[in-house]
Amino acid sequence: MAHQIPPHDDHEYVSRSLVLDKSKGEIVNAPRRTLIKETREEEKALLASKIHSEAERRRRERINCHLATLRTILSSSCKVK
Image 1 (spheres, rainbow, N blue to C red):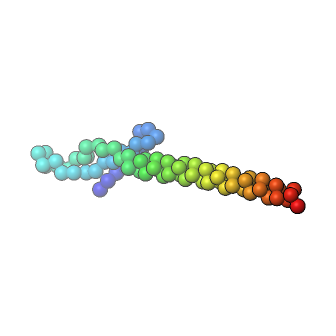
Image 2: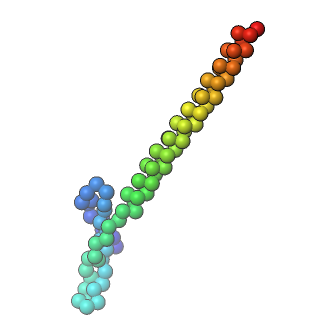
Image 3: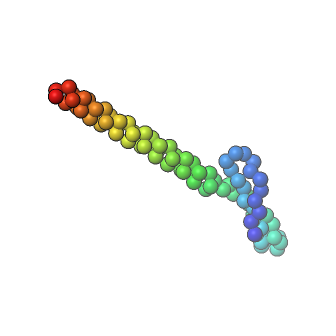
């Protein structure tokens, strides 16, 4: 049975479990262990979002550049007529 202890800072959570201490013959709290998996997953998701946003920004920039080139070509051909 795991008990969640409130976070002691913004990123780390501590999980406590009950275990049998064979030398004492009684149930005791298990040693603390830091659970940072959730934090890592959140950081990875945030990083993926930033990378995606940057890729989309570059894509829009590239498309706008191509459109500007087409506008230049079209305006030149309209002047020739």
